[in-house]
Structure formats: structure tokens, C-alpha cells
Amino acid sequence: MDVKIEDSWRNKLSSEFEKPYFNKLVSFIKEEYQEHQVFPKGKEIFNAFNHCAFENTKVVILGQDPYHGPGQAHGLSFSVKEGVPFPPSLLNIFKELNSDLNLPIPSNGNLSRWADQGVLLLNATLTVRANQAGSHQKKGWEDFTDAVIQQIAKEKEHVVFMLWGAYAQKKAAFISEDKHLKLHAPHPSPLSAHRGFLGCGHFSKANEYLRSKGLKEIQW
Image 1 (tube, rainbow, N blue to C red):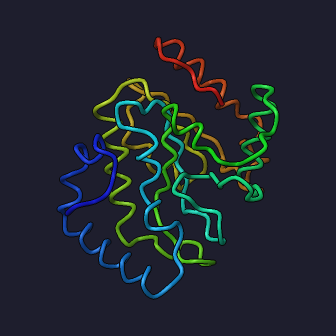
Image 2: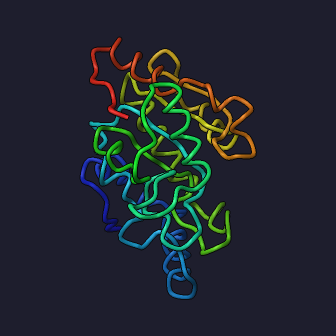
């Protein structure tokens, strides 16, 4: 199947695109886009991969669903385009950056500036029906994003995985702590951020680890 995705990822994931689950997923997604309002736009579904080639991936931040409100999701987990108000989880991420690295709250929530440095901003589910959180879960996306995590964990070394919340932490089983850094914290949602996300220091820990492996740190 011809999936429009960045070439290095196409090479790594080509076998996934031929599997029965992926064909069923594509049929489901096409129907959803025809019959409902679905986010992000079709051309942005694989944005995380198009901004962050396989060989450049240094950090993985795993979200759950794309944002399901109008104008928010654009294919990068937790990110919104310029001019879109910060969703609560993203605001908490910026608050943590401020306390961890003394960085000012940025003027916009577009995290493509991170993705272009090697941060894979991956949601476990890459599409969602408008105003219906979780509506595209258990349709095949999780199998695909499991394969993505497995490829990174197996074929790369010294990648930082930021696993925020129980949903993201389920993916941790694929990742060897001998080869990679796994950072666990509650989800940055207002429901859980005060239980340990705020104060987790993940951004400074990630940069310390990258530096210790001779890799360029991320300009958060």
C-alpha cells in the first residue's frame, strides 16, 4: 500500500502497511473522513514522522489521542498551530519547562520546533472524530504505533522515551533500559499533573542523558 510518509519511516514500516490490520484501518479511516469531521486533516496524519526522520529521532513523547476540538490537532502529540489557545495539558508542559529549565512560556503551542530537532511527537492513535475523544481507538492505530516504538527500541540506541500517564507507559515493555532512557510521570492533564508531572524534570533529564551519550541536546 502506498502510504504518504517520510522515506526513512516508509523503509522501516513497509511490512506494516501490507498487514491485514492496516488495510482494515485504512478502509475505516477513509470512511470516517467521508462521513464525519475527523482530525487532523488527512495530509497531517503522519506529520510526526514527516518532521522527524527515523535516523534523527532522539526523544519520543507519546500522547494518546489527537485533540478533538476544531483547529487544534495537526499530527504532533500535544502540539497546536500558531494562534490556537493552549490546551490544558500543553500549558502544564510549558509550566514544567519553565520550572525545570527556566524557559519562558512560549508565544505559541506549535511544537514542530521540537520535532525538527529529533523529538518524535507520537500519538498512540493518529486520528479522532470531532468532539469524540477515543473514537478511533482499537481500530488498528495502536498496532501501528506499537510497531513504531518497537522499531525505535530495537534498531536505535540512546533514545529518551517520555512516558506520561498509564496509557503511554503500557508501551514501555518494548523498550530496553540497557539501550535507552525511560522517563515515567503522570499525564500532564489537569486531572493528574499535580500528582508528579509538575516537578518531574524530564526535560533537563533528557538533555543530560543526550549530552552523556555525545548527542546534541534539544533546545526546548
